[in-house]
Length: 503
Ligand SMILES: [Zn+2]
Picture 1 (cartoon, rainbow, N blue to C red):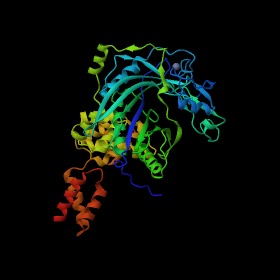
Picture 2 (picture 1 turned 180 degrees about the vertical axis):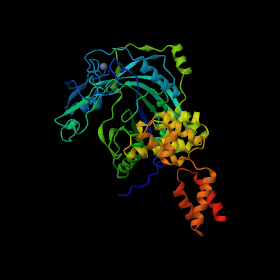
Picture 3 (picture 1 turned 135 degrees about the horizontal axis):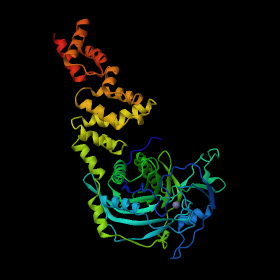
Picture 4 (picture 1 turned 90 degrees about the horizontal axis):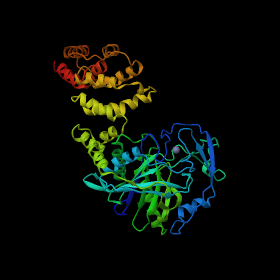
């Protein structure tokens, strides 16, 4: 069925984004365990069941009740240095991790939030088994913030610091032949090493008049604001997005677990389309929580949790925030990467999509250092090397990790001095992957990439023209480029061809 183009404005589509970013503190939020999440083999398994109880106001949370009725039992993998009695809920939490608090506060400040005078830890009921205590500890550390986006201010409703949940052991990982372990005899298996790793949860206000593509960009901007601190975790699963999507005449639907930022626009589009289709056929949009599937569509997960799911954590005393400390943090805030992105676009004249790729890449530092040290090099050339040339080389099964900063500095230094042309860079990189210690001069000679002197180039082209008199200019250029590729600037070759053709 061909997908209809949806007019999101006409449908009055509204969305809210919730970003969860793991922090790279040494220890977990309420215990001394490592946050590395590197251990593969569990040293023990703990089995539990969970029951919902009424909140202080007497209500039972709908989401909690739903999970309980599924009657599941939970198997928790314990890891030597990454799990302790706090994680298995057999010991009270230790004091709040100050390093994590500091990173989270920096993020809240970068997002222009008001910082509360005191931090109160709350428990949020979670009974899908992903928390051993059936609750997650969470605290508000910033409210009422905003972020600039395309001349508008995107409201940041709140920033919370919380414990990450335990990760479910996915399909096939436990040798059960690819069945979903969560459904296997009502048994779900979780790893406890992720439980308690600090993360920030950033919640935007309701966003109207933005296209799905723009909403994805906003999520990216929030993500790079977190990365500005250089103290957040990288890689798959370290940043996760949840969404709220609604259209006119419907209900707010929560969509959980968008793992890849690049999928966000698609998930919003598909969810809005699903809701519009329901309404068009006279059905109701249910207020519910849905899970994201691989193709960007969603499936029912559970009823939407209500307000009854939050209650105070009495094991951790409130933390008063010291004004002097906050002032110091504010003064030492790093440059937000959103500003960096702007600078790349204006000062370095990178096209917008390339600037985004550089800021999102692992090569951001080296890119900036090269532009500082070799300011005369064309930034687009440098950016392309880090965002696409290295990927191309990697695809040829060559280990680009063998390349060190000194290799890049050496290459761009040659380029700045006009001793090589940019076309020579891929071959040089491949060469240094294979022979990391070779001297630049030797590599250039061996690869025949030493730049031709103007006279040499002129002579080669003149000779080619003489060998085939009357040849069309385009053809002569093609042959000449074949002969001198990597040793002459294509513009200079063109000039030499023009000159030779006039004779
Ligand atoms: Zn622990």
